[in-house]
Length: 139
Image (tube, rainbow, N blue to C red):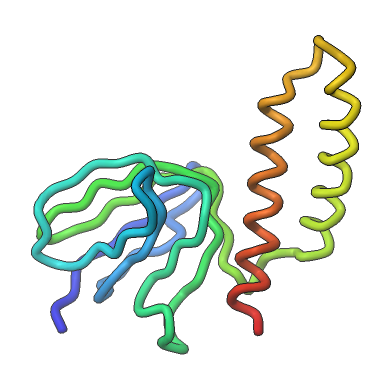
């Protein structure tokens, strides 16, 4: 199968760089798989799972991604994000604690107009997806 060059960049480092057969990520229309020889596309990445390689392949890299941007054409895929974690590095206990704290903060925010409830809900969504990603790929 043909490969395509993938670069995943964060503000701190290059998270991944190499040739891959497929990258699966979530956009506004749902999960898509990006492969070689595709027409050019540019899109936002939604909070969700990102899989480098074939999902059922033991050598694939499975990640949580907290959003970002993707540009892909026939020869390369560039992903820019500030929030990506390899499933092997997800701290499940921390994510569960964060979930509980955020649920309490959201409950308090319902009675306080000063608190930005949308920010809290976004943080909660990310914590829940870290937990889901961990549980999906650590069976």
